[in-house]
Image 1 (tube, rainbow, N blue to C red):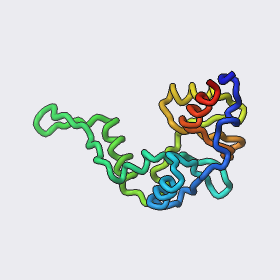
Image 2: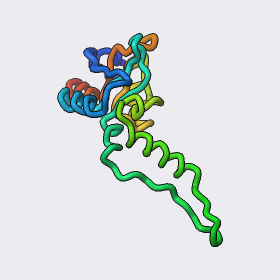
Image 3: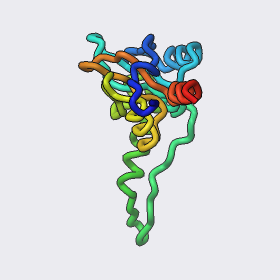
Image 4: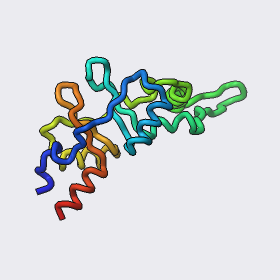
Amino acid sequence: MASSTPVTEVMTKDVISLSPDTSLPDAADLLAEKGIGAAPVVDADGKIVGLLRDEDLLISEARLHLPTTFAILPGIDITLPGSARRFDEELKKAASSTIGDVLEKRFKQVAPDATVEDVATLMHEHDVTHVPVVDNGKVVGIVARGDIVRFLSATT
Protein backbone atom coordinates (compact mmCIF):
# COMPACT_ATOMS: atom_id res chain seq x y z
CA MET A 1 0.00 0.00 0.00
CA ALA A 2 1.29 3.47 -0.92
CA SER A 3 0.76 5.01 2.51
CA SER A 4 3.10 2.60 4.27
CA THR A 5 5.78 2.49 1.56
CA PRO A 6 9.13 3.67 2.95
CA VAL A 7 10.34 6.98 1.57
CA THR A 8 13.63 5.24 0.75
CA GLU A 9 11.82 3.49 -2.12
CA VAL A 10 10.89 6.75 -3.88
CA MET A 11 13.68 9.15 -2.92
CA THR A 12 16.58 10.07 -5.15
CA LYS A 13 19.63 8.49 -3.52
CA ASP A 14 22.32 10.03 -5.70
CA VAL A 15 21.83 13.53 -4.31
CA ILE A 16 23.47 16.57 -5.86
CA SER A 17 24.56 18.79 -2.98
CA LEU A 18 26.22 22.19 -2.79
CA SER A 19 28.45 24.02 -0.34
CA PRO A 20 27.47 27.39 1.14
CA ASP A 21 30.29 29.15 -0.72
CA THR A 22 29.05 28.06 -4.17
CA SER A 23 28.43 31.11 -6.34
CA LEU A 24 24.90 31.89 -7.46
CA PRO A 25 25.75 31.47 -11.18
CA ASP A 26 27.45 28.11 -10.51
CA ALA A 27 24.46 26.91 -8.48
CA ALA A 28 22.03 28.03 -11.20
CA ASP A 29 24.13 26.25 -13.84
CA LEU A 30 24.16 23.03 -11.81
CA LEU A 31 20.41 23.03 -11.13
CA ALA A 32 19.72 23.70 -14.82
CA GLU A 33 22.24 21.13 -16.05
CA LYS A 34 20.89 18.39 -13.78
CA GLY A 35 17.25 19.39 -14.30
CA ILE A 36 16.55 19.66 -10.58
CA GLY A 37 14.59 22.24 -8.64
CA ALA A 38 16.45 22.06 -5.34
CA ALA A 39 19.66 20.83 -3.78
CA PRO A 40 20.71 20.35 -0.17
CA VAL A 41 23.54 22.57 1.05
CA VAL A 42 26.08 20.82 3.25
CA ASP A 43 29.03 22.02 5.33
CA ALA A 44 32.58 20.68 5.19
CA ASP A 45 31.59 17.77 7.45
CA GLY A 46 28.74 16.77 5.14
CA LYS A 47 26.02 17.97 7.53
CA ILE A 48 23.01 19.66 5.99
CA VAL A 49 22.83 23.40 6.67
CA GLY A 50 20.12 24.43 4.24
CA LEU A 51 18.20 23.80 1.07
CA LEU A 52 18.70 25.80 -2.10
CA ARG A 53 15.54 25.97 -4.16
CA ASP A 54 15.33 27.32 -7.68
CA GLU A 55 13.04 30.03 -6.35
CA ASP A 56 15.86 31.22 -4.06
CA LEU A 57 17.86 32.05 -7.17
CA LEU A 58 15.06 34.16 -8.67
CA ILE A 59 15.54 36.99 -6.17
CA SER A 60 18.48 38.40 -8.12
CA GLU A 61 16.12 39.10 -11.05
CA ALA A 62 12.92 39.93 -9.18
CA ARG A 63 11.47 43.27 -8.14
CA LEU A 64 11.88 43.81 -4.42
CA HIS A 65 8.85 44.50 -2.25
CA LEU A 66 9.25 47.95 -0.75
CA PRO A 67 8.17 48.31 2.87
CA THR A 68 4.55 49.36 3.42
CA THR A 69 4.46 52.79 5.02
CA PHE A 70 1.45 54.81 6.15
CA ALA A 71 1.46 58.58 6.71
CA ILE A 72 -0.57 59.18 9.86
CA LEU A 73 0.03 62.91 10.17
CA PRO A 74 2.34 65.24 8.28
CA GLY A 75 5.86 64.11 9.12
CA ILE A 76 4.73 60.99 10.97
CA ASP A 77 5.08 57.76 9.02
CA ILE A 78 4.59 54.22 10.27
CA THR A 79 6.23 51.30 8.51
CA LEU A 80 4.74 47.87 9.02
CA PRO A 81 7.43 45.79 10.80
CA GLY A 82 6.88 42.65 8.72
CA SER A 83 7.24 44.51 5.44
CA ALA A 84 10.50 46.17 6.53
CA ARG A 85 11.90 42.79 7.59
CA ARG A 86 10.88 41.22 4.25
CA PHE A 87 12.54 44.07 2.34
CA ASP A 88 15.76 43.67 4.37
CA GLU A 89 15.80 39.91 3.68
CA GLU A 90 15.12 40.39 -0.04
CA LEU A 91 17.77 43.11 -0.33
CA LYS A 92 20.36 40.90 1.37
CA LYS A 93 19.54 38.02 -0.96
CA ALA A 94 19.58 40.24 -4.07
CA ALA A 95 23.04 41.53 -3.18
CA SER A 96 24.42 38.07 -2.43
CA SER A 97 27.15 36.36 -4.36
CA THR A 98 27.00 32.90 -2.77
CA ILE A 99 24.20 30.51 -2.00
CA GLY A 100 25.03 30.66 1.70
CA ASP A 101 23.20 33.99 1.74
CA VAL A 102 20.11 32.92 -0.18
CA LEU A 103 19.49 29.31 0.86
CA GLU A 104 16.53 28.32 2.95
CA LYS A 105 17.77 27.63 6.48
CA ARG A 106 14.36 26.60 7.81
CA PHE A 107 13.27 23.67 5.70
CA LYS A 108 11.27 20.52 6.16
CA GLN A 109 13.11 17.21 6.31
CA VAL A 110 12.33 13.60 7.15
CA ALA A 111 14.21 10.62 8.51
CA PRO A 112 14.82 7.48 6.41
CA ASP A 113 12.09 5.63 8.30
CA ALA A 114 9.39 8.04 7.07
CA THR A 115 6.72 6.78 4.70
CA VAL A 116 5.53 8.14 1.37
CA GLU A 117 2.37 9.21 3.16
CA ASP A 118 4.44 11.18 5.72
CA VAL A 119 6.30 13.05 2.98
CA ALA A 120 3.22 13.66 0.85
CA THR A 121 1.39 15.05 3.87
CA LEU A 122 4.32 17.28 4.80
CA MET A 123 4.59 18.59 1.23
CA HIS A 124 0.86 19.27 1.05
CA GLU A 125 0.50 20.90 4.47
CA HIS A 126 3.58 23.13 4.14
CA ASP A 127 3.47 23.72 0.37
CA VAL A 128 7.01 22.47 -0.23
CA THR A 129 8.28 20.79 -3.37
CA HIS A 130 11.43 19.08 -2.10
CA VAL A 131 12.17 17.30 1.17
CA PRO A 132 15.65 16.08 2.11
CA VAL A 133 15.88 12.69 3.78
CA VAL A 134 18.36 13.13 6.61
CA ASP A 135 20.04 10.61 8.90
CA ASN A 136 22.15 11.97 11.78
CA GLY A 137 22.46 15.34 10.04
CA LYS A 138 23.64 13.86 6.74
CA VAL A 139 21.63 13.79 3.54
CA VAL A 140 20.84 10.26 2.38
CA GLY A 141 18.24 11.24 -0.21
CA ILE A 142 15.80 13.83 -1.43
CA VAL A 143 12.16 13.56 -2.45
CA ALA A 144 10.55 15.85 -5.01
CA ARG A 145 6.85 16.04 -5.71
CA GLY A 146 7.53 14.40 -9.06
CA ASP A 147 9.00 11.37 -7.30
CA ILE A 148 5.75 10.84 -5.44
CA VAL A 149 3.64 11.38 -8.55
CA ARG A 150 5.73 8.80 -10.47
CA PHE A 151 5.36 6.37 -7.57
CA LEU A 152 1.60 6.84 -7.45
CA SER A 153 1.36 6.38 -11.20
CA ALA A 154 3.34 3.14 -11.05
CA THR A 155 1.15 1.72 -8.26
CA THR A 156 -2.19 2.35 -9.94
